[in-house]
Image (cartoon, rainbow, N blue to C red; front, side, top):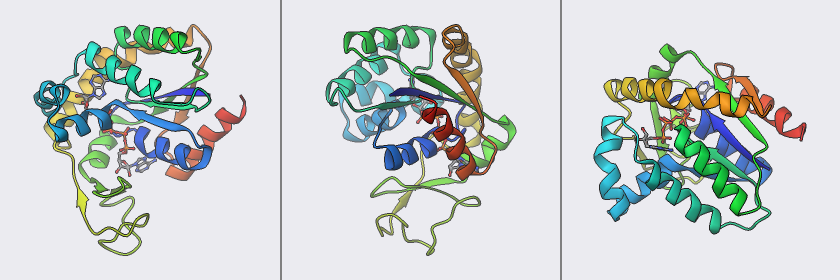
Length: 216
Ligand code: AP5
């Protein structure tokens, strides 16, 4: 099964994708995570992406579709994929169709996380992750069970993203409204879009997504 999690910054795409990886053995392909790894490693892609990401703009369609193609090639044919943060433009949606068709894969569900944008700024500016395993936390909504210690791997190192400040978040949201939300009709025409209340409790969001996947 191959699915897209769609929603504005802070909607919970990464949070829910991680849960599907743990519970369904699917593979999360997050273009944001892959680009951040490229920036950290100082690769040519990272050097091109760094300033764009810090401004809240979108990295070029060619770059992101290229890294998605490479990531798909590294997977077993039978491994289901969660696309997290991709596609984000109409051009990327068309590229994804071609990338999947070339590999004999089909897109089963597009799950839109329906959220209140005003609440997302608080979600994003309070977010931090384990520097070792990437487990996500939040200053208000999800603190580690033991303060300063990652629940999942025990690390005591945490990090915050460079683009998680209010000004950049507002730009990222504007980019979502202008370029990403308009791709939904492409998938609505195929009858594969489901909407989930992304403002609900994290566990309830997970249950709603699982119920959609269980429909087949
Ligand atoms: P990317 O990394 O994809 O960021 P994003 O889309 O802005 O999404 P986020 O990761 O901020 O949010 P999320 O929906 O994953 O929320 P999360 O689960 O963390 O992209 C970053 C940048 O890379 C882009 O701006 C762009 O420059 C570039 N880029 C990436 N992909 C690209 C592409 N395809 N094309 C071009 N450029 C691209 O949750 C947020 C917080 O809320 C967490 O703290 C979490 O604990 C909390 N939370 C989650 N769910 C709930 C809930 N139900 N209730 C309460 N709190 C919750």
